Image 1: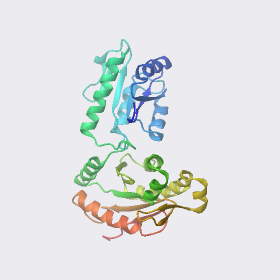
Image 2: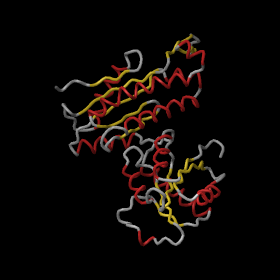
Image 3: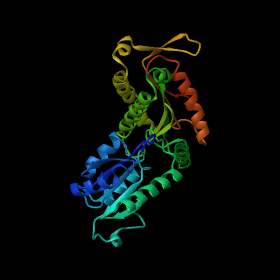
Image 4: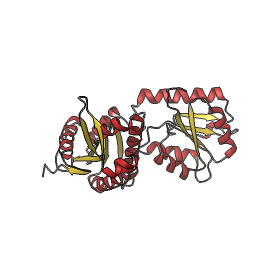
Length: 313
């Protein structure tokens, strides 16, 4: 499909023949298919390369599909993804716990191409109406970020908000183009989600504000542990996105609008952390204003850095 990014479908199915059948139905229809044979492989794929939709067979070698669906929907990082449950031929829908089953649709094998494409289209339409997921990283966008912060404040939850912003990204885009810039954005999203999800508990949340700006929520202690790891991993891999000569020079050269040469250092990451552990916030706007002010301070330093708001005691 010219000019349109293929949607990535993850099929979780223990039967290779079943996977091949679904792949044939979707081939050439604007979807890119990847497959996992069990729940463990599915989780690994989702975190390394998030899909746009997950199609889960009810019967899997290491778990049942319903349990996997519940786990995916309970995951705060990728719980927004559409999840469809696939029943085997002869499997009775009456055995499902419809009231508590957290799936976006249920399909019955064997499937024809028309029905499968229609159900996938409906699932994506529902997602677009209810969630503002970023199309590049598939992470939740602004509306969901605001809702998540406000919900935590209203519940009286103690948490930290971390803003993450790439430094010198515009110069990189000007030199290498938007396609390579998108790869840097996706790499940053993967680092954030993989490290943040390793923290204790299940309350972590990662969002993509837009462009090269990200946010994540976690407990204050988990955030303090995550930030240095995020910066370390980012600095380790960011050089690989540059050509050898630019990497050796630790900078790239571009020309501004007046034709003057401009030198841009290798990209770095600035992070600002604000929590309600020792100061009260009543709404998202207050939280965001303090974090934005602190992020501006962080960006005044050279290189990757994270700073923490220490006001309020």
